[in-house]
Image 1 (tube, rainbow, N blue to C red):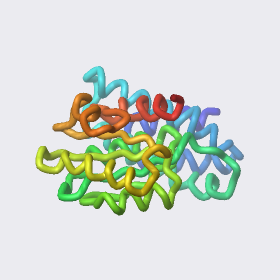
Image 2 (cartoon, rainbow, N blue to C red; image 1 turned 30 degrees about the vertical axis):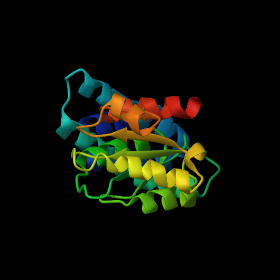
Image 3 (cartoon, helix red, strand yellow; image 1 turned 90 degrees about the vertical axis):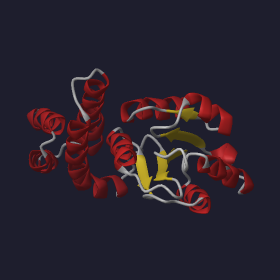
Image 4 (cartoon, rainbow, N blue to C red; image 1 turned 120 degrees about the horizontal axis):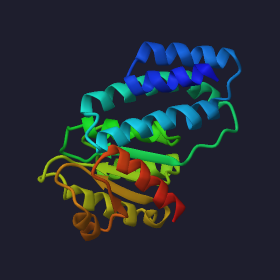
Length: 211
């Protein structure tokens, strides 16, 4: 469908107005919401993510594409809620207590959402108790923890301990990320995985749910 090709290009170029307008037209023409997400939006976000990894796109382009995707997704959200369309999985994401950085975390959230996941973005400065409560409330498949400071990254271990104390650690996969984070740190605190960028986070989430 021509409108879906236009939507793909609009998201790729970060054109919010065109992405929203094209999505509206596609829905008027009875386009399937799941096809819009799977065949168009997810492909566009995957492409911009790959361009970022190869150095052909940069953070501003990623943010613009994510904004365009989220604008289009807002038109689809009511249809997804009122239908039997299944999502790829449910993810709770937030920046840990004491850390107020959110640009990278928001980008990861947008990439995950554009790839078909239901994402609950808790924001910044989130306590271990709130993370655990949100995992229970939303029946999350994955919990994503972000930290940009060496002084706050160790709090991730507190979050995992809270999941264990609540008896739900075995029910949810834990992904961590942020500038000071590494794969070795993930292993040290008992996380299930680490991603260095938003595109890698989507791939990791899919791998964790398939395992």
